[in-house]
Structure formats: structure tokens, C-alpha cells
Length: 289
Ligand SMILES: NC(=O)c1ccc[n+]([C@@H]2O[C@H](COP(=O)([O-])OP(=O)(O)OC[C@H]3O[C@@H](n4cnc5c(N)ncnc54)[C@H](OP(=O)(O)O)[C@@H]3O)[C@@H](O)[C@H]2O)c1
Ligand SMILES: *[C@@H]1O[C@H](CO)[C@@H](O)[C@H](O)[C@H]1NC(C)=O
Ligand SMILES: *[C@@H]1O[C@H](CO)[C@@H](O)[C@H](O)[C@H]1NC(C)=O
Image (cartoon, rainbow, N blue to C red; front, side, top):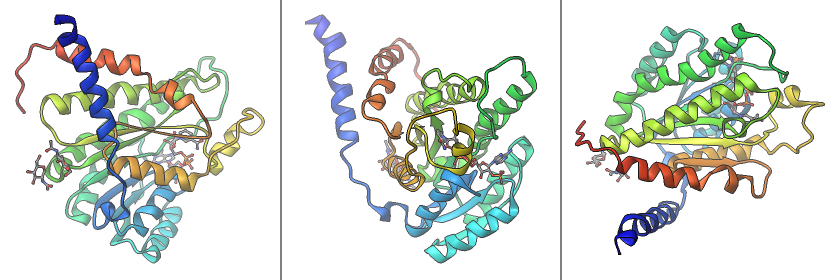
């Protein structure tokens, strides 16, 4: 009986909770009038997300380094029906820019409902030898800037019961040779944001965090970087972008998208979820905001 109470019941609750939390259906109206930031939106998956959000009638503020690229995406967003569309160009190597960008975007839209963190610095696939300089830059752009952006956005997200969406990769859940620094930056995102998600629950902060685990997607950059190396079929970026937005709107913990059958089940690691569930129970804390 004690065993039942200690282990079986929580597991049952966990899985029933999971089952019902995935029951709600996505409706495009969920994004109507929502105020959304998309980083790395000048091309690739970021640009596709901006287009979907615009079609759904959201307000968007986009960023990347290329002003020319952003200008084109913003015009298209307005044609597609965005409630409003702006861009602020800059590099996420610069943490001052990252912080200021969020504050300016919040002013432009009068608040923030969703922060989509998607940019990465370009990394060719190669075996790791000794390029510490490049490793440091990858950690800064792919990881540290995500933390800076989310810290700057949190006050606005708390007000709106908003969402943080973190774009990661299969390489952020398992080892993938020739991508060591990139993989490290994506694992770091999982460690950091999955922990913050738990802290939000413990401190009653109603800001959801959705970690998106993507397989190979047919963006120009990825096709260039993997050509002659990977033999897997890439999945379409348009559908990928839509699946991310759906998962984010439903406030899911994780989204898996790619050309695979069983990998998502294996990667999602139920063992880790169960251990995390019990580890929270070991905290003897009464926490309030
Ligand atoms: N495509 C895939 O196969 C794949 C697979 C798994 C995960 N993902 C993830 O999906 C996300 C998007 O990937 P993608 O393939 O769509 O990439 P992408 O097409 O190369 O787009 C990257 C975006 O980031 C911007 N960017 C690059 N360097 C930057 C910097 N220093 N500061 C600010 N912005 C910068 C780029 O614009 P500018 O150059 O103008 O700055 C561009 O808008 C990434 O998080 C990636 O890890 C992709
Ligand atoms: C946020 O959620 C709380 C309940 O947790 C609710 O009282 C409040 O009205 C919500 N605020 C917004 C802006 O939706
Ligand atoms: C958190 O916010 C969402 C979105 O506004 C709302 O649907 C949900 O009821 C809130 N949850 C809690 C526990 O307040």
C-alpha cells in the first residue's frame, strides 16, 4: 500500500496528466492578436514561422543580422495578414543588443505573449580538434543569448501568462559526430530551460517553456552544411514551422518534428521524466515567488 502511494499513484497521475494535457486541439485563432518575437527570422524555419504567425493574425517583431532579408520578410508578413510586423536588425553575439531588442520589441507591440528563440550562428560540420574560439562563439550565440533574451522578456511574459519557445535539435538530445560545439550548445539549452520550467512550476510562474527537437529540415543552410555528409531525407520547413507554433500554443513541454518513425519516442526519454518527477519531491522547500 505504501509502495502504491509512493510510486504507482504519482506515475499514474503523471501519465494521466500528460495524456490530458495533450488533448486540447490547436486552433489558428489561438495566435490571433498575440504579440510574438521570432529570432533568426530572415530565412529558414524562423522565416516560415513568421509567415504562419502572420497568416494567423499575430503581431510580430523579427530579428537577424541581415536588414535586407528582414525587410523582405516583414513586407510579406504584412501581405499575409499580420496584425503588425516590424524588424530590428542586430547580432546575437552582442548581449547588449539582445537585451535592448526585447525591450524595444515589447514597446513596439505593447507587451509580449510569445518569445520564439530560433537563431544560431552558422557552423559547418567537421570533426572537433581545437577550435576553442569558435566553440566560445557558438555557446554565446546559440545558448547565452537565449538566456539573456528570456531574462529580458520574463517580466512581460509573466504579465501575459506567455510562452518561451526554444528551438533545439536531435543533436541536443543525442551525440551526433561532426557537431560537437553545436551539440553542446543545444544540450545546454535543454539543461537550462528544462530546469527553469520546473522552477516555474515550483514558484507558480505561469510562463510555459516549449523545447523543440528537430530532425534534418530542408532549409538552405542545413542542406548546404550536410550535403555529402548526411544521407537522411530532410523534412519540409513549412510544416516544421507550423508544428512548432502548434506545440507552443498548446503550451507543450516538448515538440518533436522530423522524418522519423520511432526516434521521437526514444529521444523523449520517459526514464528521465519519471526521475525528474521524483527529484522535485525531494526538495523540502516552501517557495513563494
Ligand atoms: N535546418 C535543420 O536541419 C535543423 C535541424 C535541427 C535544428 N534546427 C534548428 O532550427 C533553427 C533554425 O535553423 P535554420 O536551418 O532555419 O537556420 P538558418 O536558415 O540558417 O537561419 C538562421 C537564422 O539565424 C540568423 N543568424 C545567424 N547568425 C546570427 C547572429 N550572429 N545573430 C543573430 N542572428 C543570426 C540568420 O540570419 P542572418 O544571417 O541575417 O543573421 C537566420 O535568420 C536553429 O535553432 C537550428 O539549430 C535546424
Ligand atoms: C493569467 O492567469 C491567471 C491565472 O493563473 C489569471 O488570473 C489572469 O487573468 C491571467 N492573465 C492574463 C493576462 O491572461
Ligand atoms: C496559465 O495561463 C494560461 C494561458 O493564459 C491559462 O490557460 C492557464 O489557465 C493558466 N494556468 C494557471 C495555473 O494559472
